[in-house]
Amino acid sequence: MAQSHSHTHTHSGRGRHATTTHENGAVTQERYQKLKRKVRDMQNEYDKLTKELERSRKRIKSLKKEKELLLDRISQYEDSDSSDSEKSVELSSEATSDSDGSSAQHSQASSVRPIKKARGRLSTKKLSPPTPANNIVNSVPITHPSGKVPKKRASKRPLNAKTMKVQHVEQDENGNYKLPVQIGILTVLNLGTVVYDRDTFHNERYIWPVGYAVKRAYNSMINSKAQTMYVCKIEDGLENPKFVIEAEDQPNKPIIANTATGAWTTVVREANAIRQRDHSNSASGPDYFGFSQATIRKMIQDLPNAHKCKNYVMQNFEVMKNRVAGGRRRGAGARANGNAKNGTVESPASVNVQSREENGVETGSSVGDGDVVMSNSGEGEGEGEVELESE
DNA sequence: GTTGCCGCACTAGGAACAAC
DNA sequence: GTTGTTCCTAGTGCGGCAAC
Image (cartoon, rainbow, N blue to C red; front, side):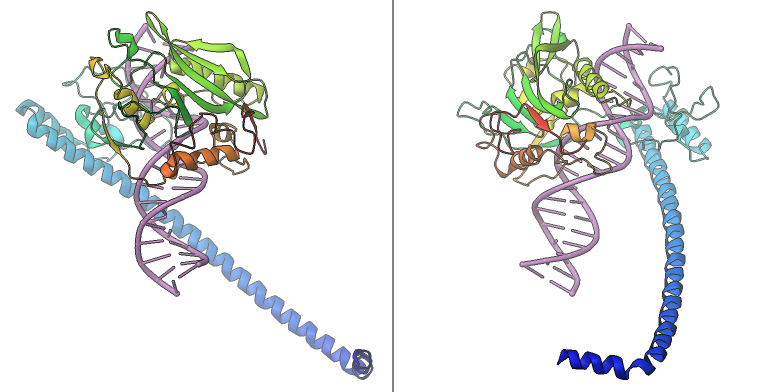
């Protein structure tokens, strides 16, 4: 049946075939022209939209600047309300003289503190917006020796100005936190003991309790393709705290430094060196040690004698509802490999799991043994090294 | 129920600042 | 100039919500 049909078709259709081909050719040609036109139109539209986007971006930028300037002015006037008349004159004169809308206002007031050597931000990077909180020192515009206007970095935020949200951590009947506990990418193994009678064991921002210990994953210093677990500890160095980092794959080579940053910079430098990466080796010690984590700060602040640390500024914390926070699901190493931005690095699955657990869905039990975090992918004990899926 | 958008929380990396 | 600290930005995923 099919055979006869096809036969008939070929046979009878021969004469027509040429015309059909011809017509088909014309149709194809026509369609091709149509598509070509369409592509051209789309290209034009794309160009138009791109330009529009660019314009909008510029507009947003200028509006942002304008907003910052206005906020700045507002805070200056607010300040002037509470200051003496002399300052008011200073401020108003500044306000009137500041006509270029640049960042010239981000400078230090001689009346508040002596003007230090200008260290203007000269990069092309966006200047940090002045916030009402940091505007206390902004009043007299100064010009950078190079002729450029120095971009003044926002002064430190008041430590207790903001209530920080923290995740709920289970406590026992005595009010002690149940450890180990997963906080972010860190596992808190021990909170240690507050040393309140020595000033070097705390500052206004952080308390460094002796015995404090956390565990986290980071790039190995000896295996360029692996991550390993690092235990960060604080030990009593008598005069000052000693920050100790022990890599699980180098248990006999602890890194000891007088600061958290110093210790972590060593790790980052070595981890980068073995990967032959020459980008910055800077590391934020407090971040890596977990001191910038609000939950950990709260836990330390809740330790006995923490309130006796005279330089430490007590901070306000608020326990979050059981919201499963988002956040980066990638381990430190993924980012540190520099590929996170282009998405070529798969996060270690374990880190994802850890984060899910950490995020309030189930904190207490799942992290009960402290190893659970990095031991996903079915390797209960051997979580020391986490192979990256791609490098 | 699915999809898409938006806001939030969080992180690593790096820039800027401060102290020496 | 170096080292350490703090802050900012970009990137990411999830929950909430509305629209379909």
